[in-house]
Length: 105
Ligand SMILES: [Zn+2]
Image 1: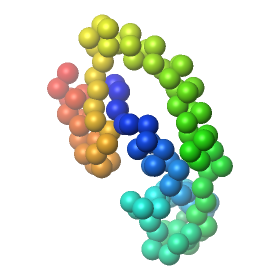
Image 2 (image 1 turned 90 degrees about the vertical axis):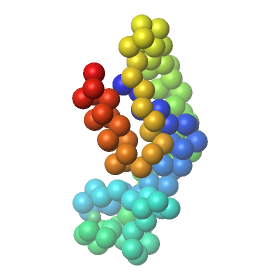
Image 3 (image 1 turned 135 degrees about the vertical axis):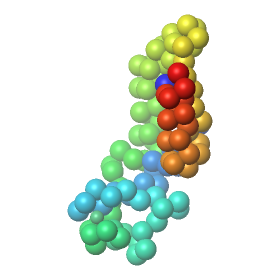
């Protein structure tokens, strides 16, 4: 199963992600911001960004991913066994697509 998302969108999603140091809740600076900047809506904890969630580090992670995973993707693709879903939609839609694909196999 491949959840297909363009690199630029992944960089946007990760580099603008904020995590609560208290409860682990996840926010996004533009698509899911907290009510008060830097403060968790759930527990009032401080929101922080992971040190490796910057564009340079993310692109480095792509490189590792491509080296390790791309050969496996190609193997399944060549065998006609790769299931791909569009990962650019909102999470609920991606979840629905995942369910549809796995239920109808
Ligand atoms: Zn919290």
